Image (cartoon, rainbow, N blue to C red):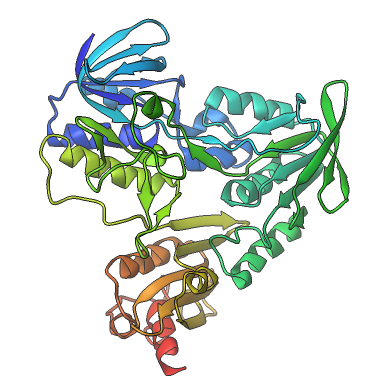
Length: 445
């Protein structure tokens, strides 16, 4: 088989690349190889256990790509000869390509978990609908589930499992709070309060020391602090690492996180691009290597690679900015860039601007929700370093506005002077708009 472009990986990065390249040149001959029978929405994985009802509701149709002539192979690329531009799949298919795009994603971290970890009822979160369907069916009958990891997948999974099972759900987190890497304590504590209100138990500054089992299943886990928890199932949601087996096998350099090194055009080598979780990242603010795995970043990198594949353009990556969002029990949370704590660790002298208002005006309007915004500025330059917000659904786009301010390196004075549209049923009042008021508060402290 011959193809102009071979894409290895079929989730956000791979599919996003195909979408963009076909906009540029609809006649492009593309072969996409993925292991999974169906593509899914990775950020929707926690919701297959509750809100989405059926795991298949989180699948993404191939119809559009197939209609545009994309050749999709459900297979696995096992070897690549980059000199001959030849890929071989597990089924024995040989694919000759002109350009290669690696979008192989990431895999769940399997931490070193001490004694007795070889049990049937220890699970990980894989991006595979068939696997997730089996896991959901298994968990339905369980009464005591422990989730190891209090990051975004962990907390969202905990909330969704509370809708599925009639029993106890516990989070074990090694850090000081859930979501501590993305939120300062005052926001992280709000997250934990919501989880506790719906019956989730949280153990912080704890890890698993030992598994105690019977007849092939975990029955109890021992924590490093000495406590013991009875369990029916254990789910690890302790992060992910780049899936770079192919890249490493063909000699592509890796960064300290194990990701394939790419330049600002997403090139890993001549006629080879890497995008998404498997590609290296540099922090937008500090320039330091970072490991950030987000579908939104994968989608952006896919566009950049597509526009640079044949001719390098003015489209390139200036760095990676982490913009994260979640929603728990109807309350939305978002974070951009550096938290106050992270900024100080990196040596910044910070100035903070915060505000709390209702997201409609007057506040007595039906559906009004308290909106809290915190902006972090560099005290010396006034440039915004990051921000956090919580409230109703409008937090999503509010955080994206903060992200735009960070990416354009706006100062507090410039943010204060922004002209914003307001409406009683949609936003806070014109004199109380959260972002501009938070910026002003940082200046008058």
